[in-house]
Image (cartoon, rainbow, N blue to C red; front, top):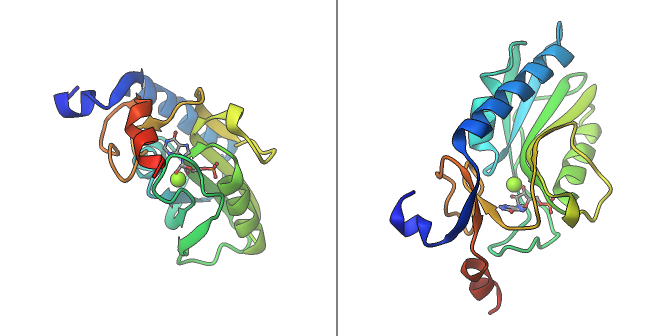
Length: 187
Ligand code: IMP
Ligand code: MG
């Protein structure tokens, strides 16, 4: 671990190799569930981008990729609950099989919003694949179809996940020290 980053991290939660192995397994599962079909895989920006890049290379059925940018967090560690659609997808998904790729399901508000959004757009099927699931924080009764890891109620960074736009480039998943976000959230 680089020293400057090390100071902000409580511990590494999931090592790079463990993530890779799990992404491989989930990719195989998706490929087998969608055998003979085509998929539009949607990366939810920015948090899912690293997971997404690894995952699509483990999927063996034909895929198209699209990007949708959404924000719910503002700049703190607590969800604002308000979801902003900042960049729409560029294609028509009517009658298509959509696979949403998200970084983490926390309250569930974002995933609920996304499922409604693609249903409204007329997708034929909508599935969701998430890197992390924090079930202890759920507000909306919702569960992703594919989940790589269940995590405790800590603030997680790395492998695409950020705090105030930092730490996305860590190759592993780590728990951010509480003092790193509490001091910023109380203003
Ligand atoms: P939800 O709408 O409350 O489920 O929040 C989902 C979004 O909040 C995710 O897409 C993340 O961007 C962000 N988020 C929730 N928990 C964490 C975390 O532990 N680390 C980094 N981002 C998080
Ligand atoms: Mg996100």
